[in-house]
Image 1 (cartoon, one colour):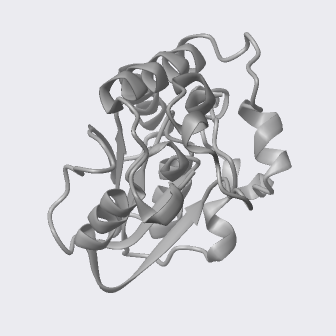
Image 2 (cartoon, one colour):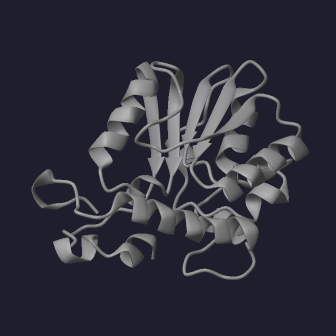
Length: 205
């Protein structure tokens, strides 16, 4: 959803954030109601999550999964690594990451939707994950210090940012030199008209 000439789309960012929050609060609170996008365990199969990754992951996290791809296709995480999950949602990717990095590693999930954060924290407690925490925040202003992460993962979130350059600069800020970025997201192959970029329902739908 980049804009022509590299500019930032003229969309009300606060209105967009509120619309996104409403959408994903519904996914957090009512995961079985049906949405215009795939969710839950069925989605994990569509995007190629391995059954072994989901062993011991609480259904609390799985049932509200609403990603667009599989950030682990770009490589498994290493024991002891620090991982930042941007737009962590109900916590499934953070909890998978926590298993991969082990007790000596650490995972921080960041999300702006309180219902998702509550679900993720509950899932971490249910699963006994002691090396993961979830923080409220936005991808353009991450609540993580500079050079903290060995790896930044993100799943279906960057497409929701009007100013993708700003978000990517934040990803770079929190990554250690030589760190890895593993993004799964939506890619459009032709330019989106400026008029469409200003319609909130097209961003969330």
